[in-house]
Amino acid sequence: MAKIGFHIVKLWVAFLSIHPYWLLYLKSDCYYFLVYHLLRYRRKVVRQNLLNSFPDKSEKEIKHIERRFYQNLCDLFVEAPKMLRMKKNGYRNRIHYTNPELVKQLYEQGKNVFYAIPHSGNWEWFGKMIPELTQHKGLAVYKRVENPVFERLMLYIRTCHSTLEMVESNSVLRRLAQLRDSQTAVLMMADQTSHGLAQDYWTEFLHQDTCWFTGIERIAQKLDYAIVFVDMRRQGRGRYEVSFELLTDRPKETKPGEIMERYVHSVERFIEANPDNWLWSHRRWKHQRPQMKEA
Image 1 (cartoon, rainbow, N blue to C red):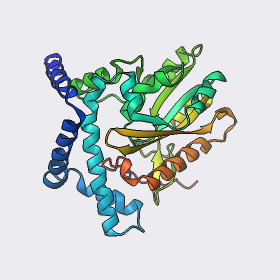
Image 2: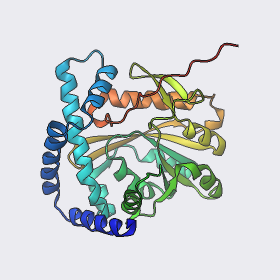
Image 3: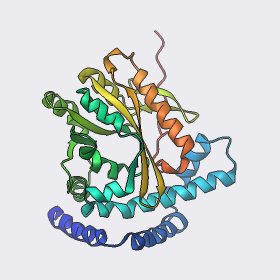
């Protein structure tokens, strides 16, 4: 049944992929009205996240960010099918890189690279272009989902017309160890909600005590990967601008937590400058820092 379901959904997505952009964005406007006004999808979660993150903003400003976020979210939804048909030139025409020389220099220096990107801009489109930025072997880390149809569909969309290799998060260290003799560039979504354990990295983020996965720091230090923060912001419908920021090219020389703190600060600066470009609908602050037991 899962195989049949995959092919049915695949045909539907392929049909959507041939739609012109103007029609997709017309559909996005309809989805926005449905999701925001009628279904009120996670409205309470989004509103509370915004209120806690921007205590100095007025109610009018919060509502404006909230509406813009839902509009962007619906645009992301209709842009995804285009990945089935878009080739290199399609992405090049829609993504502008302000400083691509940074990652090219890292390749020339023989460095492996982690692209640390938050849930901002269109991270799926950026992933498809990783093999085109340099001659690094391109990989992207993903977390397995329970629905087998959706799992297979997303892997198919993410790898079509691309040499990008998808690596499940639980096996990323093993896979990168196998590629020690290759120069690799790895995309990792490093702002996902961790388990809220004491061993997670805890720090203040957007005025709230926040926990973070530390995998990107631990793996970078172990395998000596440079870490580049990806600032991807929406410039218009289907138009994005990407800027790269080098967090470190000498991870082995950093102290525990230093890389994580640099990354958190970069994400925070991005969100403060582009508040509607981040994914506010996930329950980012559902954990509280565990209390340390007294000796």
